Amino acid sequence: MWRNVLIFILILLAGIFLYLRLDRDKRIKTIRQINSDTMTTTSKTENEKLSIITVFDNYRADPLLKTGWGFSCLIRRIRPIGEKSGSLKEENILLDTGADSDILLSNMKKLNIIPETIDFIFISHLHDDHIGGLNGILKIRPDLTVYKPELFPKEKEIIEDVYTTGSLGNDIKEQSLIIKSEKGLIIITGCAHPGIVNILEKAKEMFPSENIYLVLGGFHLEDELYPELKSIISDFRKLNVQKAALCHCSGERTRELFKKEYGDNYIENGVGKVINIE
Image (cartoon, rainbow, N blue to C red; front, side, top):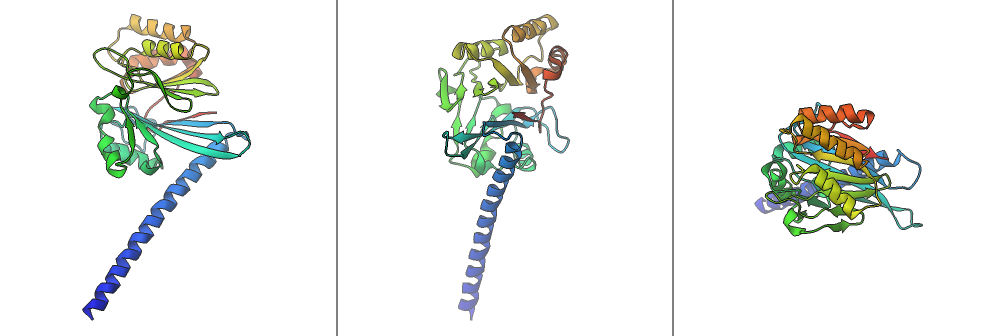
């Protein structure tokens, strides 16, 4: 009798495990499809679709999400494979992980971002407010590739049309991400310790014929004085930066000055902000 009961319990547990596994796989597939449908409805062409979602920041764009000191964003790109196949490929890059795993994973869940869909993590620099959530992600995805700045002493293409500037700066080594899009270069910084203008000049050195469409992230300008901030904004204009989406360590005064200068081309960035490049 007890043997039969034990066999029944084992069969029941196996069934529960199988159900949970299938349910998880179904959720991943469903969310991927929802995200793909959302992005493909923005255009009837088969051109590349690109979204940048801020998942961790000390500024808030979505009142349902949690804030914390630090920065993280997800870059989601859907692009056609081959000229005639009609197939699409989705790529998800997590840039930095904020300061806290619980906040990061909570925000990702509310934004319908599943860790299993991330292709790799790009770490701008090794400060706690950018790597604090890393262990939480790696507990879920221990096999996930993590690209830290020391891996790239110079610029390099990581995947097609996605580049690192390479490790820049003297005291604090930091890399930034550059994406070549149909609109132009998209440059994403963690804290811009090497200097935000230096990073932009590096991008132009790498791609002299490309315009800079969007610069997004932390600019590390909280303590800069007014004349220096005006000089930086002037440099942005000289480099023909079309749009700016400041957050994290950029500073309130910096955000206000950029907003005044850029008007409709200034993007209020914070956790929960979704920027679609159409």
